[in-house]
Image (cartoon, rainbow, N blue to C red; front, side):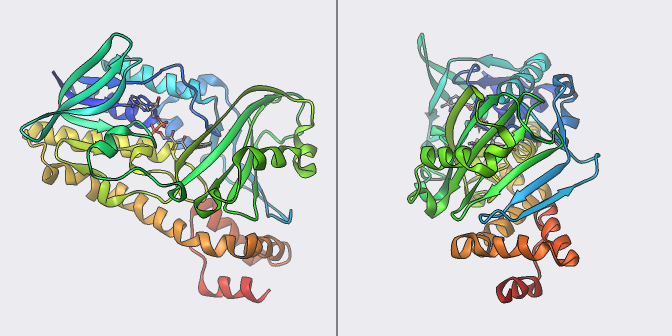
Amino acid sequence: MFDVVISGAGPSGSHCAKILVEAGYKVALIEKNTKWRKPCGGAVHSGVVNLYPQLKNLNSQKVIGVVMHSADYHKLEFKGSSDEYSIIVDRLELDNIMKDAALDAGAELFDKNIAYDFIMKNQKKIGIKTKSPTGIKEFHGKIMIAADGMSSKLAVKSGIRTKWTNNELAIGKCTIMEGNHNLDLESVHVFFKPFQGYGWIFPLNDKRFNIGTFTFGRDNLNNNIHKIYQNFIDNPNVEKLINSNNKIIWSSSYPFPAEGVLEKCLYTDNLMLIGDAGGFVSPISGEGIQTAVTSGKIAAETAIKALQNEDYSKTSLKNYRTNKEIKNIIRNFKQKFSMINFLYENKGNNLNKMFKLSKVDSEFRDQVVNMFAFGDMPSKDFITKVHLS
Ligand SMILES: Cc1cc2nc3c(=O)[nH]c(=O)nc-3n(C[C@H](O)[C@H](O)[C@H](O)COP(=O)(O)OP(=O)(O)OC[C@H]3O[C@@H](n4cnc5c(N)ncnc54)[C@H](O)[C@@H]3O)c2cc1C
């Protein structure tokens, strides 16, 4: 019998587990496969590095700049201050560091267990059933947390949401390559596309980089991820930066939720959904590690209150959804989602115009930078200027 049973030892599940065991609760952390390297660009915000200083031992490159390219290859570069930065990591290393921190604190890991359903008693969820190499296992708990990513079986079994459809998702393909590249180690490259999505190049060190591309929403149906990935790495503007004789160290593809948090589908009696399972991935950019960690923290704090009050009902777990940090994420993601049509209108032509205008109008350029760097919403004047240009 556990206080909390968590399915998924990715960033959201491991962080949630760590906070709960540090508060003195008994936690089961169920994981399908701890050796799985999740397909990811590996860009991790300094907010997560501050929570896990062990990440500094990886000696990862600090990134403070972005070079953005429009679909017609106009360029806009900016660098921020060095106190807010990202590091580029190998995802397996990140997941191991976060999982080990939860285990060191006292969480119990059950590896090679696939959570597939709830244990029910009197119509209440009282635990999680898993398939393991030695057969079906049962983990009883007072609160269950689905942290098992976009393909969460528990989220769908719970009935609080249905399986995501193709056009609610993004699909990405990424590769770690090794070779002589020409990248500035302090900057990432983002290449916007004439369809919904972008390509990226993130430097890992002076020999390695993570390169990938994704498409989302309606444009998933019109594009084959393997073809757009190949077109991207063969593009002369990209080849200039990475050279053509690189060795592929690892490559994989995977989807993520593209429409933001499903605010009405985050909790029910005895259950909360965190990280990708709850849609905590930023629309347009596809960043989800930091928000997964935040959702894990708030779910843990909500669970601690519920355990103290011995009330695991949905009324008690509602505090997760109404928390200020969660509300801010939901608001921010809604704003970003509302920008998609504008940015990708006419095959990305508004983005083309924005980057072109930025070259001659510094005030306008600042607005574009603030939009991408700080999520500022463009003013009506800004939109009119783009349309008239
Ligand atoms: C191609 C791509 C590139 C990305 N690049 C970035 C980036 O550069 N920066 C960024 O911030 N975000 C990025 N993201 C998003 C980021 O990967 C996710 O938002 C983040 O990993 C979410 O963390 P999580 O813990 O919620 O889920 P996950 O990281 O998906 O972890 C879920 C865990 O659950 C396990 N699991 C799954 N099913 C089961 C089951 N049935 N039973 C038990 N365990 C199970 C999995 O093995 C996994 O360990 C990218 C995503 C993709 C697909």
